[in-house]
Structure formats: structure tokens, C-alpha cells
Amino acid sequence: MAVPHVLIFPLPLQGPVNCMLKLAELLCLHQETHVTFINTEYIHQRLLNYTDVLIRFAKYPNFKFVTVPDGLPEDNPRNGDQIGKIIEGVEKVSSPLFREMVMMTTTTCLIVDGIFTFAVDIAKEAKIPLLYFDTISPCAIWTYLAVPKLIEDGEIPFKGNDLDALVNSVSGMEGVMRRRDLPSYCRATDLDIPIIQHVIKQGKHIVQAQALILNTFEALEGPILSQFRALCPNIYAIGPLHTQLKAKLASQSLPTSNSLWKEDMSCIDWLNKQPNKSVLFVSIGSLATMSKAQFLEFWYGLVNSKTNFLWVQRPGSIIGLEDDDINVPMELVESTKERGCIVSWAPQEEVLAHPSIGGFLTHCGWNSTLESIVEGVPMICWPYFVDQQVNSRYVAEVWKLGLDMKDVCDRATIERMVIEVMDVKKIEFLERAKQMSNLAIASVGEGGASYQDLERLIEDIRLMRI
Ligand code: UDP
Image (cartoon, protein in one colour):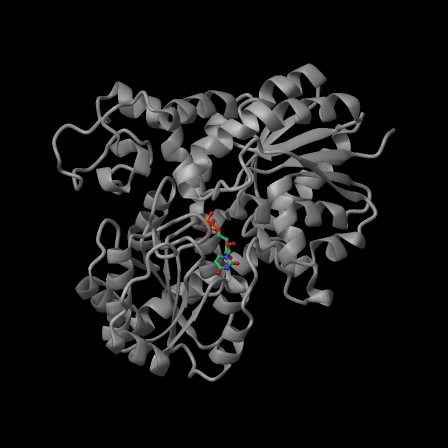
């Protein structure tokens, strides 16, 4: 029998690439499995520039990278506004090369992003199993799958302007979801836009895969996973993936990075000087942007809260800042010298694990949310788009691990929420976050549900070989 050979193809964005590299490493630890990891040239170059990924993976002779073009011009910023173009580029330019690769190599199975609908036909043609890995939250994917029902029931497009009206067409989420908590594209007045059409298409394709891999754990999303199993019987819930990998690499526990920007390690020295649980970490991830007006509201809110803060200002994340400088009031600059640290990119997992961190003002991307949960850090959520609207509702209302600042961006609210999480309700939030963190860690420990699902995935891949 040939050795198992898995082809992994992530959506070329920071979050999915990070997740899939972690899965690739977990598979490589089982030396029997060979892994080919497909990166777009753009992503690969950034990984080479800012990480030690080649050295790290050199210890796995069963691993190799392959690159494909993404079809976008060099100077495309590849941020959140460009997602439609990124997916289109992969479909048009990368996917034919991917198909060729599948046909020409002996491949046991494909593990690709859940948004790659083209993979269904390629897997069928090659007569090999397809495993979709949706790296966003199951609670959000569940709402994506409900889009046809939301349309059928007349819940979207919304009638009237009341975003607080409850939504009843997402099974299992009745009484929880308001219109404003649905994925951001549900606010569109015209359902004929590409993202909605793509989500509908994705829903039809997901159920055609042999299995679905999800980055979550039973204790966090058990009820949603049960709903999923009725639709796709074979689910591997193997998260939190970064913790699963850390647990497996425990003996060689140097922090690893899959960052597409250069990490500024000076923030760790700054954190080392701050009191325990005193610092609010502020980051909106790799895709979200904010206007200059929102940027100033954030800054005033942070300074007025009188809390220490570490703020990631990713290059390009404040719209127009690079072309046209703004006059930052001196009072902000002076107060920041006293209690703030600003960097352009941080080693986020290490930051969240630092004892001085007491809260996280986040855009609620799924990786950030899970990383915060694992470290027991309460959140203030300022979701930007797609799945983040759903995640922030779950963080605040279902898991009660923080506050939801959705659709609001004024200094008074930011100040009030920071004080609530970092001071007034600090102990309460920290205790709840600690309990969830314990459950997350237990899930990837020997015998835990995510641990067992990963073992089952590896064994199933072994049995798939031709
Ligand atoms: N991240 C990081 N340093 C930063 C900001 C973010 O390493 O300064 C990482 C973070 O740890 C997470 C990823 O970037 O793993 C962002 O993924 P997420 O799903 O949270 O959000 P997205 O960027 O996809 O919106």
C-alpha cells in the first residue's frame, strides 16, 4: 500500500493559512503521512520574509510546500475589502493548477478551505475523498448554511430598519440572534451580490464532502456541532488547533509564528514591566480596517479609560492614514507615552498568554477569539465583517466571556466597556474566562474530545490510502 499523501490548500489569508499550517504540522508528526501544502506565491513570500517556517518544517521530510499564483496584481492590498477578488483569483487562476497537481500526483485525500467549491468536482474526477476545513467558527458557518432558509422565510433582506429584531430562521439560535448578529452580508438590500450567491453555493457543496474539519471544541459549541452532524455526519472537531499543536510539541515549546507581517517583539519587554492583568490588548486582525474618525474614537476611549494598553496598528488598517497624516492631539500622544505601547504587528499568541494581559479588544476573528479563550482573556468585541458579527454575539450572550461593542464606535462607549471589563466586572469575567480556558485545554489533552477527533482523523486518512 502507498503511504498516505494529503494535499492541503488554504484560502490565502492570514487566519486560514495559520490554521492549516498547524494542521499540516500535526499530520506530519505522524511520520507515516505525507503532506503537500499549497500556498499562493504572495503568501509564501511573506511567510519566508517574516517567519522561520522553512526551518521549522525542514524537520519533517514528509512535508513540502508548493506555490501557485493568485491571479492578483502585485500591489493589491489583499485586505478585507478584497476578499471577493481573492476568491475569484483562486478560482480562475490557482484552481486549474491545483487540479493538475491532484491529477498528476498520488493523492490520498484533499483538505481545502470550505469556501473552495471547485474542489468537489476535482475530488470526484480524481476519485479521492474531499475533507473541507472551515477555519471560521461553526456558529458562524451554521448561519451561512441558513441563508437559503432566511431568504425563504422572508427574514432577509430585512424589512424596516430595526436591527434589534430577533431572527427565528436559524435553527438552534432562536432567541439569541438579532438581525445585527447575522453575518454582515445579510444587511445587503440586494441578495444578488456575489458574496451571498457564493455562500449559497458553498452550502450546497459542503454537504458533498466526505467530512468536515472544524476548529472548535465540544464544550464550547456542542449544541451547534450536534446540528452539524445531522447535515454532515462525519465531523472532526479538533480545536483549539493551536493548543492541540502546542500540547503535541510540548517538549520543544519555543513559540512559533506563521505571521504575514514582521512581529515587533519589543512589546513583550514592555509587557514584562506591567502589573499582572493590567493591560488591554487591542487588535483588529489581518483584514479589518477603520476610518480615521474611528481611529481617534478608539484612541480617546482607551486613553480616557486610564487603562494600560498594547495596540496593534497594522500597516494599511487605518484608511488613508499613510497618504494623509492626521493631527493626533498632543494629549493622546502624552497619555500614550505613560500607559500605552503601539506596534505594527505583535506575536499575538505570546501576548495573550502574557500574565500582564487582562483583556482583549478584538474584531472577533475566529483565531483571535479562540486564542483569547484558551488564555482565559475576557473580550470586548468590535466585529468588522462576515463571521465576526456572529462570533461577537456568542462571546457576549452565549458564553458570557465579554462585551459586544458591535455597530458602535464612540469614545464614551469604548471607555465604559474597557472600565467594565478591566475594572468593575474584572473578577467575574476573569473567572468565567478561566473556566472556559480549562475546558479548552482539557479538550486537547489525552482523552479529550478534540484529541480523540484528531486521532480519528489521522487514522481515517491512513485507512484511505490507495
Ligand atoms: N495576529 C498576530 N499578530 C497581530 C494580529 C494578529 O499574530 O498583531 C494573528 C492572530 O494571532 C490570529 C490571526 O493573526 O491567529 C488573525 O486571525 P483571525 O481569524 O483572528 O482574524 P482575521 O485576521 O482573519 O480577520
